[in-house]
Image 1 (cartoon, rainbow, N blue to C red):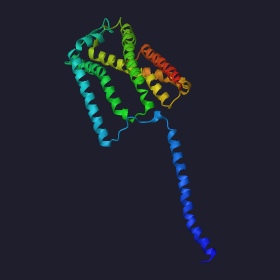
Image 2 (image 1 turned 135 degrees about the horizontal axis):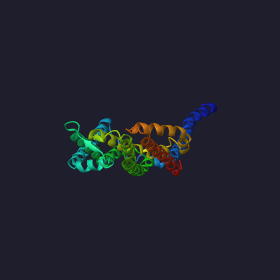
Image 3 (image 1 turned 90 degrees about the vertical axis):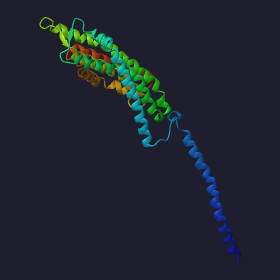
Image 4 (image 1 turned 45 degrees about the vertical axis):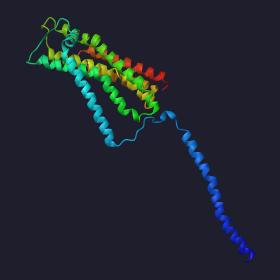
Length: 280
């Protein structure tokens, strides 16, 4: 074997060895870069309660939670139906000086069922809300879970505030307008079914309208809409509040619509203040 052949043979043995060394020297660098990339993840975006479940498991859990919620609502409604007379008398208080009539057979019975159903739903709402939270909780990040307690507490307080606002301000103002408008022409004899249809719709629509700040806080903290963006559209908000007041109030008097529209505007700008306080 000549010296040139010895050099070529030596190069053939050296080339694989060099490639192995290059691979060994570069692979740790790739792993280090991957580790650095993982370390940049915000721990608030983790899913601490993540559980692997199939679609059928999710549907089964949803079915069970809906069943439990409906059962509690039904039990609450039955309990309210047993003691429905004090609730009816309480809701008749804003209509002072008005005599209620039963204009059809069973009208008061169906009114009692309706009142018991609405009242039972209000009483069972904490349990229903708990079931909803338990269903969506495994899919929430740590950042989103931090919003649960303020949102649930704020939503409950605002809904109760909406009921109180409607009972002590909206309903008396609307009824006073209707009573005084035709006092010298007609005698005030009202159908009990029509009255409770009016008052229950106004109570619950006002309670739902009072959820506006909660929605704003959610949108702001999730980075969907900033407080500056909310404030920039104030003209459209005023128009929307007037339209919302006209839609949600079952009466056509301008006083009730103006009161509800004013409350919606106050809640909206108050919600902007809350979003600003959170730094969004």
